[in-house]
Image (cartoon, rainbow, N blue to C red; front, top):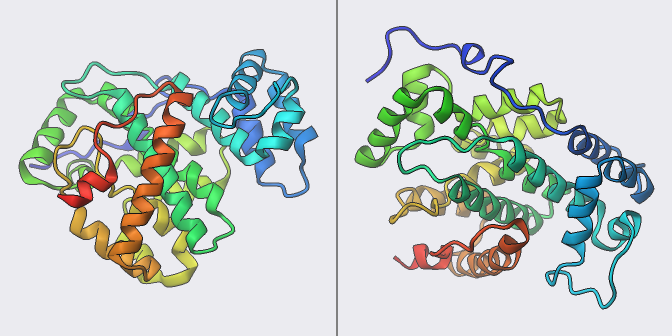
Length: 297
């Protein structure tokens, strides 16, 4: 069922609805686009935000990194762990802190973030396997691709109740149902949010295109980076019992990478392990079902 009067995205995401992203996170992302910036440059916005500084130091001193001595300064943390890892962590914390948790049927915000983390790790690993210079950007793009969904659920609960019901009953992608009902999808919404936050254009493009895998694959090597993020969006959600888009995913993976089922299985094992290691750092539960288990079914 489609609406007779399509709802403009600008009318849904008006200024009063959109949360503000902390300036420190935006500043770090903008610095990450400048190859001439080093740890000293990245330390400034972090040190100007006492809350973020404490989170960063706790992050680098966690058992995940396993340093033999305590890291006491932000600049030392940036030097040891890397500016991109710290930027991605800061971005995650910033988005996590401002996105609402709508009261909406079976929706679970932590499951959304679990999905986002797993997809981000997968997109980065595929990007690295393809030797793409933008592999770290792919992590951030995949991490943010679904961030508009909670806002949409909050603002349009009646419409999304219908869409979620149809997704389960018809086995279709949410984005396709959104396009039918509204003329736009949650990728367009997330891209608008990222643009309003003045995030770098490359991130906005990665987010905007994540529901267009077929177009990206058809474009060839020039769109391999965005295709990694779009492919990651087809991974199963933590709240789904069955992986409805498995065949589409596997076909896309093989077309993008030229790799085999065995190589995909190996990649999934790596992503599952990385997710188990990384989730506790972000105060998230480890997904109950691994990608390897979905694949085996």
